[in-house]
Image 1: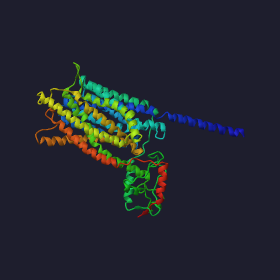
Image 2: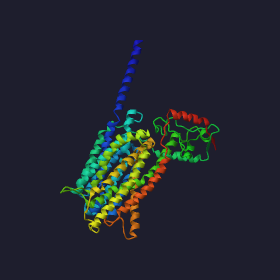
Image 3: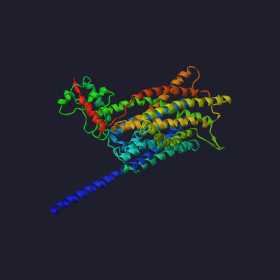
Image 4: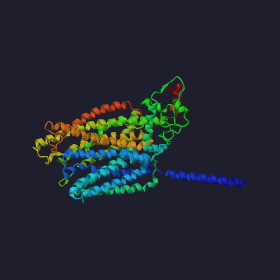
Length: 581
């Protein structure tokens, strides 16, 4: 008898120990120890992107001989395409490759694009240089398309929402993530742009290519620490099923006079490993026409198997509603990104006409002023996280101090104020040029310190801390889990479409003002009316802010069932539902 018991006991001990070992091995994955590798990768990628974008207008105008307005539109178009491609990259990641493989492939493409760019400014013959240069730019845009939507989401995935300690760490992750990428961007603007202006463009782009090689190596070093999510198939299929099912049942109505049934997936999600990992989303009253997709009518009741194109779960329907609610917010932030586009274009050209001397021998590169945005953010993010949030929390009682939408709205207001201030500073610059008889000498240095531009750079940074970080958090938090890469891409695409809108505004302003013989955005900034252009942007931003406030007032945040909501739901279901066809 003893001999028969002993093996069982040993087996149980062995099973217990192996489970413990397995658990310990599992605990080594994820958390800050994994996320830090991804943050460094993103810092290197942002270093490369801003080292190129920050001074691109200077290369196009000074080396390739493009007019200022044309160069500004080319910069905006490239930034726009770079921010639109992530929608495709996110779809590929969520549906087929997964985030890890997509980041790996896109990082390699990005590296090849930067190598080609370095060659285009060095060994490529002059007659082919422009074509190769623009080809390299758009190879980089393809790499950006796969990298950008996945890397932040992949880093956030390293924190387990079901682990209280990791969930608490995740709450401040987005602030510190943005701090990291701003550090990379700021160093690029100071160091790389100095190399481009004072050593050579080949040296500048060569450093960027080297940083991407280091980033790829860093990403591979952390490979054993990462938590990876497997692709779940096209998330758009599940969305389409809801619309098709709702359309098929458009004649079905709900009343409270009898017992009817709504289909609820007992797995707690629409795709087997649901949105909230075992929890159900609370039914909401918005977009009620979609609710018909989850009503079990007579045909569904008689069918032995569930037809996903006729019957969808409550979670599946609510996930579609989550996506639909974000679309108006997306539209309401486009003007903010149209304003941001000035940072890489007209702000830089303004600075190039002003006094930039520090001491007798050093000239500040005009594009290096963009580092002021980064340095301001380096100060503002910790102040926001450690000072503003605790103070606001005492007033509002909200865990984050203010809601995500309030945070975004404050940034939109700052953006509008920024354009008003920029217009006033430009007016002062032009008046100084007029006073010294420099109106028809565009290459002359206007005797006005470049540090007068400091307020518009600082306001750009403050707007970013509120709106950009708020958008990152909103589009991660409110998207279905299976679509979080697409959520990141959707947030990034705001920057892209905003750049296209800025290009369109430039074109419209050029056409209208040229008819009256006084082009606002001519090559001679002293004779141009850049201040009027800034004030047009301020007016459009004011209108946009009003629209955003109206949209935000009706926004419904994602709600997850807990014990209280479940009890309330049971009471509500006592009224029942009757299906009438």
